[in-house]
Image 1 (cartoon, rainbow, N blue to C red):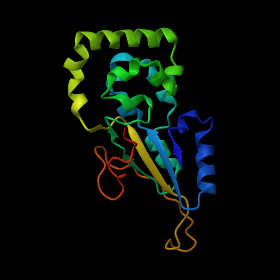
Image 2 (cartoon, one colour; image 1 turned 180 degrees about the horizontal axis):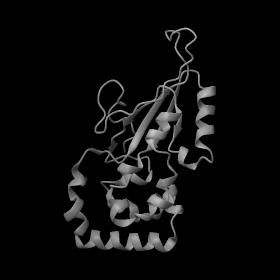
Image 3 (cartoon, helix red, strand yellow; image 1 turned 45 degrees about the vertical axis):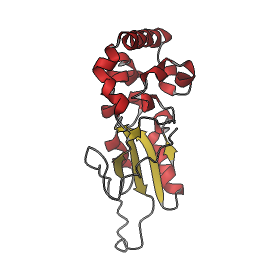
Image 4 (cartoon, rainbow, N blue to C red; image 1 turned 180 degrees about the vertical axis):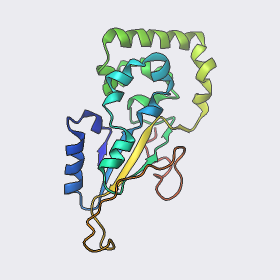
Length: 195
């Protein structure tokens, strides 16, 4: 299992191959779909620089599905009161981004120039004080969860005994359809820690 870490690996392909090699049954990744993250208000309106500085280091979901055997990807909706502390976790609690302790616990803030962070926080602080943020995004304060781009990628590490003898085939993965996760491949609702 690798949770929000593959973007920090020097060689993602080699790391994934090693996970598959040592896993008994399954490889599970929690990662970010950067295309969805790019639409999140904190990135789009305040810190678009994070796409080049941090988000670009995430392998695409399609690339992960290509590299992992029999892989699937599912949306992990993030609850508004998520306590994990990764950057997108505060999508419905914008004041949290103004807290230095919150920012200290998330790598994107450390990969941006201090002036960039200061400018973004100054704009956010002003928009919160003037009510501009709430006019644009206040409805998020009442949403129970949001798709911020967090994805669960699961791959079978071993070919089952039911596979045709001698096939040795490892079909490439497929991506689940976009939108809210549903059905048996979806993670249980609320599986992320809550306050």
